[in-house]
Image 1 (cartoon, rainbow, N blue to C red):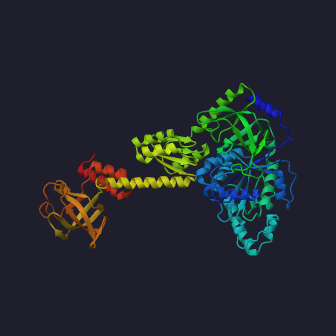
Image 2 (cartoon, rainbow, N blue to C red):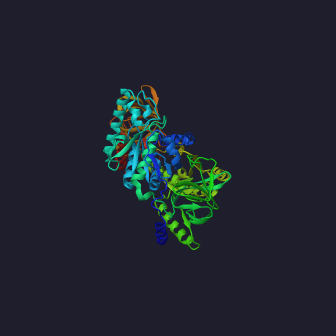
Length: 605
C-alpha cells in the first residue's frame, strides 16, 4: 500500500487540479437543498420525503456553468475544472451523515437562516467544521424575507443591498449583526464577504436568497476563489484512489447500483474494485461507470452518461455484479494487480469492523432495518436519544429471516417484538410471517414518522396493559374519617373521609392498621359534591362507599373501627410491583414515599 501511495505521489502534476468538494451544512429548513436547486435550476427539494433531505446527495457543477452564473461579476482566473457539491441532511438525527459528508469535503458552505440566526444544528455543524479544521464560508440565507426586499439577482449582492430602501437596509443590518455576534460567541470571527480583507482570519459571510437568486452568484464565485487560494496542494490531482460509497440503490433497467464520491484518482470500466458488504468485504468488476447530466443530482433518476473512465472529483454511479449487500459510507478500493484483491479485502474488513464497533446492542429491544449504513446509524442515534433500546440491526429489504430475529422478543416483551423499517421495502412473505407471529412492522421514509408510529404503538400497549391490571393495582392512600359524615354504618358502609395523602381510587381495599390491620372492604364508588368521580387526591373531602368484597364477616362502623382510626390502602408486594411495571407514570413522589411508609407498616420486603 505504501508503494502505491509513493507511486501516486510521483504521478501527480501540480498544475492539474481536481474539482474541490464542497459540503453544504446547516440546520433543517435553512434552505440548503434550495440553494443547490437554484444553482442547478432544478427542484430536488420537492422530491424529498416531507421536503427534508434524508440522505447525502452530490451534484457536479462544471466550471462553464459557474462562469455563466457569474457573468455579471468580476471573476479571478479559475484553474479548477468545476465543483462537486454534497448536500447533507440538516436534522439532528443525521449528525452522523453530516460527519461523514464533511470528512469527504475540502471546503464547506454553512447555511444560516437570517430570520432565525444560529440554531441547534448550525452550532453542531460549526463545531464539526472546527474539529476537522475544514475551511468554510457562510451563506446568510433568506434575505428575500427582509422587510420590503427588492430582488436584483443580476448584480452583486453588496450593490443590491445599497439599492434597497433604508428600512430594508436597517432590517438587514440588525439581523446580520445579530448573526455575526452569535458566530463570535462560538469562538469564530466573521465578516460580510465584501468587507473581508483577510479570509484566513475572518470567515466570509455571503447574504443569499435561494428563492430569488440574490447573492447566489457571489456565493459560487467566492467558493471557487477561496478553494483555489486556501486549499493549495490539497486539490492537486493524484492517481491514488480516494472514494467512498454514498448510497446503494436498485435502479430499473440497471439493477443494483452504487453511488460513489470519487475524491481523487480515477475509476474506469473493467476495474476490479473491493467494497464492504453486510457479510464482509468482497471484490467485483465494474461493468459500467455512469454520471448524471451536469448540474443534475446524483440521487435523482435521469438519463445517465456512460464513461470508459472518470477522474476525480466526481459523483458517479457504478454497475457491477453482486452489489446488493454493499454498505454505504465505507471506502472503495481498486485492485490494479491480481494478487492485491485479498490484501484490500482484509483492509476493508478491518475498516468495517471499526465502523460497526459503535453499534452496541441491548439484550432486549426493537429490531432496526434501514436502506444504508448512514440511515441505520441515524435511526439508532434517534432511538438512543429517545431511550428506545434495540437488540438487532440490519441493512436492506425486510426478509423472513429479519422477522424471525424480531420475533425472539415475543418471549421477553411484546413491546419490543417489532421491526422499525426505515426507507426499505418489506417483502410480502415477510409481512405475512410477521402477521402470523404477531410481530409489528413499522415502515416510513421519514425518521420522525417511524418514531411517532412506534411511540403510538407503545402508548396503546401501555394502556392495554394498564387496563388488564387495573383491578390488581392498589394506589397508596391514608384517610381520616369525617365524624359528621357517617351515612351508613353497615355493609355497604357509606361515609365521608379526608385524604391525608396519596390517591384514592375505586377498587382500593382499605384496612385499619391500629386494629390489627382489620380489613373493612373495597371502595366501590367515590363522590365529590354529589358527583361521581374516578379518583381523589391529597386534601380532598370525598364520600365513599365501602363494600365487603373478598373479606370474612362484614365490618361495622362503630364496632370494628371509628372516627379515631386512620384508614389506609392495603398494599402487597404484588400490588407494588404492578404499580412499578404499569402505573409508574400515574404515581407521584409523594405517592412513592407513602408506599415506603406502608411497606414498613405491612412489613413488606
